[in-house]
Image 1 (cartoon, rainbow, N blue to C red):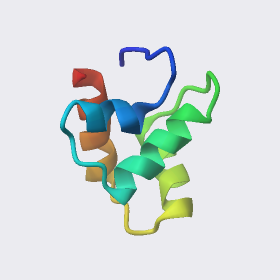
Image 2: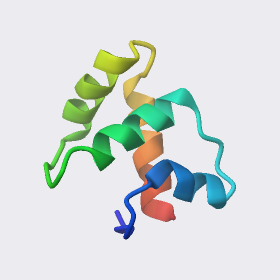
Image 3: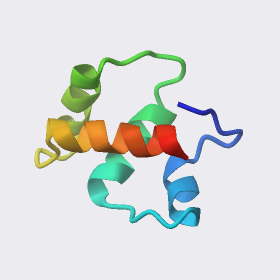
Image 4: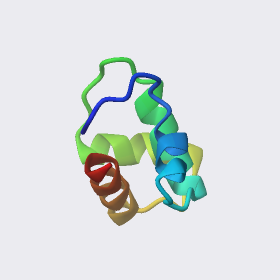
Length: 70
């Protein structure tokens, strides 16, 4: 994943034309507020469902793919 100076993943995605869903907002927020913690996808998913139970594992994978691409 490329690093951003301001670590505002959701706004960076929005500026590039990506839709910001609640799930993406939650995942981006977790990553932004995690400091330098490294997550497995499953760990990130477990954190995400604490905030929104409707986030599935596939959504976490897709969000990470999008973040990696921008």
